[in-house]
Image 1 (cartoon, helix red, strand yellow):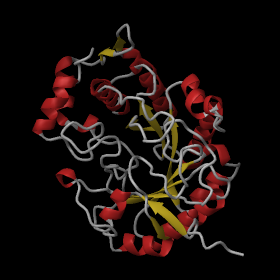
Image 2 (tube, rainbow, N blue to C red):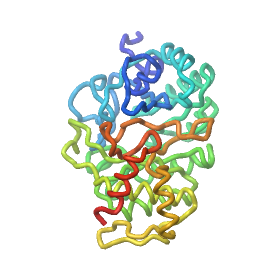
Image 3 (tube, rainbow, N blue to C red):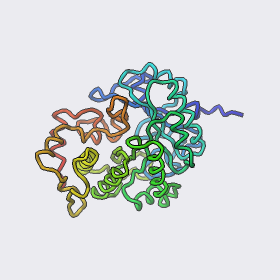
Image 4 (spheres, rainbow, N blue to C red):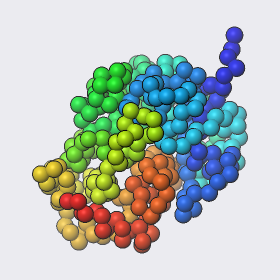
Length: 347
């Protein structure tokens, strides 16, 4: 007998910012920000079997799965019928949809059917944030055949030791560092560059040097870098952990930009005794001009058909303010002044 519980593949959770952008919930965002990507999350009554220390969906976080927030906001549940209809009447700035898998074996087949429906019945391309731990051989090819054109993998941690501590054995979790890198390689074989991205999260105990070395490794592989800041989720095992200093995050953002634009490399940069960047490996005047553009400090994510970042996640890393860990729009002069003041403040 079929359950009356609203679950995937017939239903999905949707980010609050997406619901506002699609007109399903009334609301306005700071400085007129808009969410350019329809962010969806597979949904089951039993939830996710993983127990990542920083995640709002962690198995051992108090509350039912339906009640749990994710990235600090509620994710209301909608039917796929409602979602398809809303996407097809969405404003022109909505350029992509993305389905986030969870560590639940049922979502292997369900995600494929959801991708197929979105790719066939809406006007925008579809990405998938993969759950490497549950994937089997052939799943990636089937996701592509279903209509996905890009995939991402939330590596998150900069080192194997930190990954194991916060996602693996340290929290009795199922995830393994080696498996995530295997799936990155497999994804490159199936989807190719530049259609594979890795989520990285700054502020989990790594040094700037360690994070930048990882970004350099990903660049050599052909994997795009989608950068996040740690932002403690209430009720999670790391709820008391502080956000990284703004200066640290700004420096890592700038290093990412220089590497991915082919302007510098990890080997050209210099680091202080605490692993902080002290020299980005390019002439100072060129660096100043790049900083003034503001582009390095904007959200990185999957691109839309227009070549611009579609997955811009407004205020996903912080509360709305002139000082932001990821700007969902070009920083204005006031914001650029603050960026320049803090970029080397703690070096």
